[in-house]
Image 1: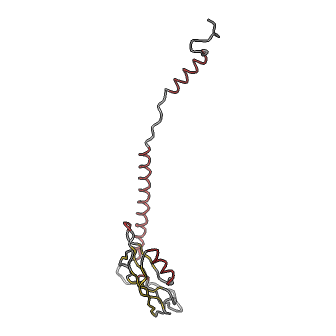
Image 2: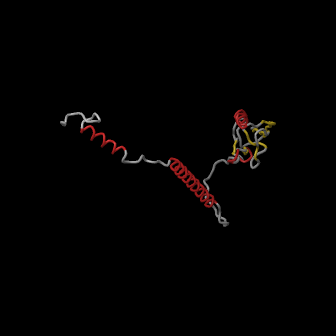
Image 3: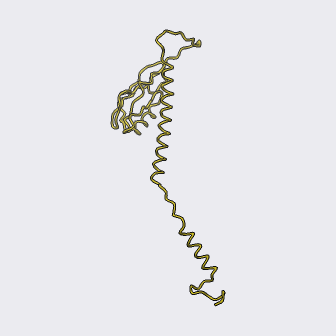
Amino acid sequence: MSSYDPRSSGCTPFEEELINAMDDFAHSTDTPAFDTAGMVHRTRRRRATLVAGFAAALIAAGGGTALASMGDGASHTVAKPAATATTPTVDHKKATFLLAYGKSGPIAVDLTGWDLATAKGQFLKAGLKLGTVTKVSSPACKPGSVVEVTPHAPKVVETGDTIEVKLCAG
């Protein structure tokens, strides 16, 4: 038999050697195993840790701001810039209501200075009913703007509740 004669497998020696080498290579390594569930949990844990850290930083910054703004009990005089005319302030607490919002807690909605049409739109979105609308005179507001809502914060309103509105008469 010469080297060019076909073998019993029908392949040349080079082809047989190539097939054997490919089989050895194909069966030499295991397929990689990925722990996808572990990867997902690890990513979620990192994200939760990042969000918690960011929230803690905001709370710490807010607490520091609150502590810095609190007085130490001693009376201090602070220089204020001279004003030519004093503008009365508007009480935002009276025009703010707390809307119950699932497990995350109530959401504060401040309607101070809004017109009646916009306030009605917010009531529709929240599923609230508009009660009586009255006008009150106040020098510190724009005529036709919301000055007070009843019930206002800290009382929480639920979907379907009725809210009464007081508008500025001018």
